[in-house]
Image 1 (cartoon, chains in turn purple, orange):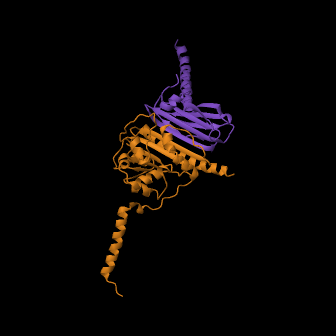
Image 2 (cartoon, helix red, strand yellow; image 1 turned 180 degrees about the horizontal axis):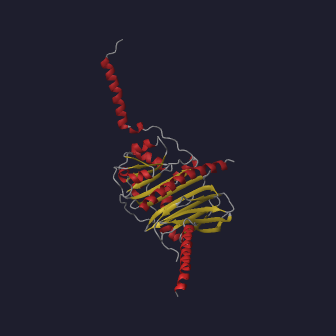
Length: 160
Length: 241
């Protein structure tokens, strides 16, 4: 009995150490990992399915960071591009950056950051292929993917 | 011809008095030309804190300010003079300065806002900061009105890069206020590359994390401004090829 206990002890210690090491390694890898929602092949009137909208973000305890991007792929200079990232908090815009560009192929917002758990950054991407043409608009989000225009507009309607 | 010593004294007094009188009504005369902004972002951006006293607002005390390389001053003139050393990148302003700003200082503040300087109003709500920046509103049509305590801030930044004839069209369409309000229709008839960027954030200075977020937002805004200015120059160069 006592011999078995003696043999088991190093095994248990090794197992515990391995588990702790793996957990810490997982944490290290997790810090700074970039998560994103990316929509590709989006239709731009008069141009084709070249639109890309994305929200890239990461969490570095205790804050969230995110950048919104509106771009074309393959790279195509179009009449107007807009990337507008927003985070709402209880009926107010906590933080936002709205960047537009005429005669551009891509544009990214500045990095926004916030620390309220449960709040999501939503990027609105606008594309206009030619002057006076129709505007195509799409949204992406982080950390909750699949946010809608309602959430972009007022902070409500999170994805289920 | 002999000149009496007393006459010389009178002349000297007259010169000193007239210069003093001129400075009294025209204090900006003491502000020397500002230092031009470099294309590359400086290692230490010029962040200026316009404060009424040395009193602490939340955790925004002299220690926190020094740690983050912020210069402090007690008057608009101090802020304007800081440009002699280095172009301004960000301005933190306590609400009383915004509530009683002179026309000259207001014009100066608006010019900084339009030059991409990050403006942080400490204790100033949307209406107070909007008025100081010559805007009708800084509130989106879906945002609720709210008040700001002295330890809460509203931060804004505008970048407006393009040829003057294109920017005049943006100006004429009241484009910025339309964007802030939520109307995001693009303009037609723009000839050259134009980049516009508007940022807005609200926050507090009550905890260590609040402070990290405040200075992270300021540095992110400053980096963004230098990056967009460089990208605009690249767009112009490409369009001329």
